Image 1 (cartoon, rainbow, N blue to C red):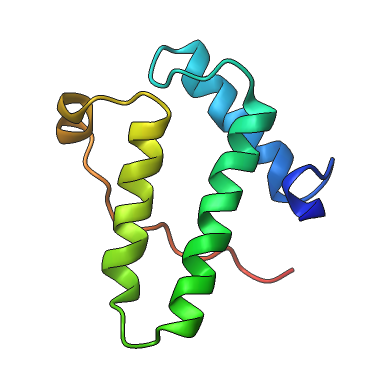
Image 2: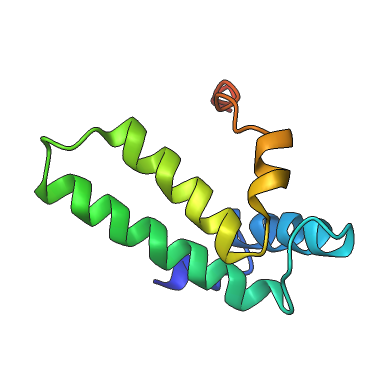
Length: 95
């Protein structure tokens, strides 16, 4: 759980990105810190579900998570259609 509020790692980057999306009117977020906790909590729940139910389609479930999070943060169905979720970028090289 400390990863959700850490001042290092992915949390500050997620907060920055969510705040930028809010500032640009793409998402309806009052405060990025709780938004990161909400998204992180949803992610932890999905990870737990996939761990205990290996028969589930992980790709389909994670796509659903992304769409539901966008809805939770105020992105309309019309906007989602105009900006479809594409594949994730390739992983960064190890340093």
